[in-house]
Length: 243
Image 1 (cartoon, one colour):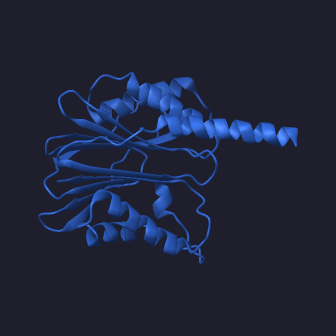
Image 2 (cartoon, one colour; image 1 turned 60 degrees about the horizontal axis):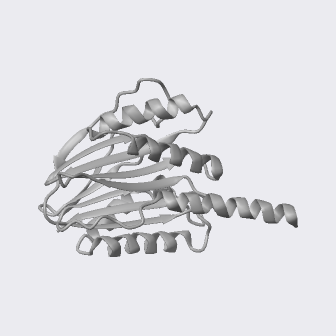
Image 3 (cartoon, helix red, strand yellow; image 1 turned 90 degrees about the vertical axis):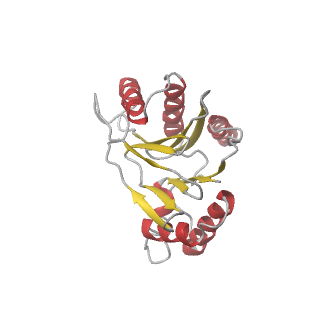
């Protein structure tokens, strides 16, 4: 009993630490509607999201997924956040290269960190990715949702990695959705996955909703799909809508 209590106490402490690594609140920016969601599959998950507002009004949005679950994954999230805090303002792909160097030097064995970094300044959106699922951008002008997949290996995979970068517009009514793979890979009773195409369709269909309501709709449909089945992976969703 004492041993179980000790283990439970350590798990609770690790879970509290993970929660402390997340933003206390989402940024409040006049022209942006921002909402977030995180559901862990175990006591301590490996997903992570964050925001870093800059003095010039720009915003870095982070969404990541460490290998596996539990305390080791939580450690990798801690290392990643500390690395980001220590970086100067720079393009997302350069941030990923610098973070890759940090994670590689720490050397956590087979553990890797997948990470998306989106940088928004005015109506210019710059995206880069280290092994994460695609970004989704709903375009209000033509009422379609684009799936934007950028190549890039997870942090800690190799030394001296260069990452791709894409700059695009982000106008009034547009929506940026960043997800971890736990949502797309949620299985139903037959083992079929929720999949990215379904996420894309939901974003388009419910693009009239605010950011928080859109996330609720995504999770409502994901839970219907799961039908009570436990999802084996963490789910993280970040939605930013330009007002």
